[in-house]
Image: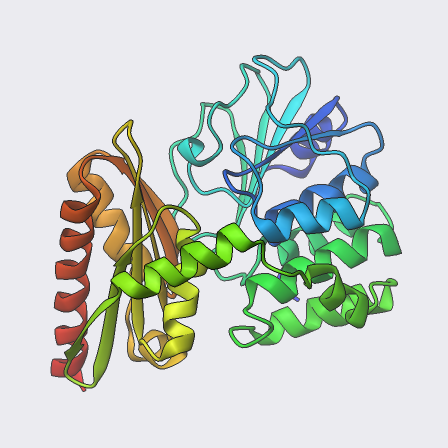
Length: 323
């Protein structure tokens, strides 16, 4: 397996020897929640805090593993804040005031963190759980079943049930299974019946769905009230090669989630580059991977969705020209 890149080991061990606050990113997913649960087991006494709620999968995982996740972080922290699966400070705001921050992340681009932040950034990893699986033994801590199960669920979820996994993902999964993370339990841990509100939102988004054909690629867009990532994922399941789902609220906050098919990713589409460029233009924030990325900014959701669509069309045309 690939070694964990990052800060000086002694500096990292010193930071992790302090009282730990483990931060989950906004709408924390299975990868983020699974990593914090494993780290809390590795470092007894550590607290876990959400910053803006949990995803449906994150909630189910925490409930089934009977792990308490605080709704909001404290305003300040005397120990070390460990931010997990987060590329940009805005995606876990408000970050508590503290003088020791560790970031563990696998997204394509690392954002601007406070000076002195110890950054473990491995964009080649398909999930942050893969990084944490390697990190824990490197710190001299034995992987236990209580750590292995949530980490395996994180790998399973973030690789799209291993559809987007690398050879290293499978090596990590083998390590976790050998440490007591039962694969079937990891899958069951994420099984859930979607609440009626979420199913209703998905159906309304489907009613608003629009699509176009760009060469051999199908591009789908829609507006939704929430659940942007799930909506985009379902549009790809319906047949889209690229999906963009946008939401907006009364405060003018806009979120866009994007997903792409394996074929589009292999052809060279990069949604993280697309949304990061839009974030630079609109004074927003973005992050993710070639096949799955998110965007946040202030503005009009329809206008921003149209801009993202235009950028996506440009990328798809360049793919066609390069074919």
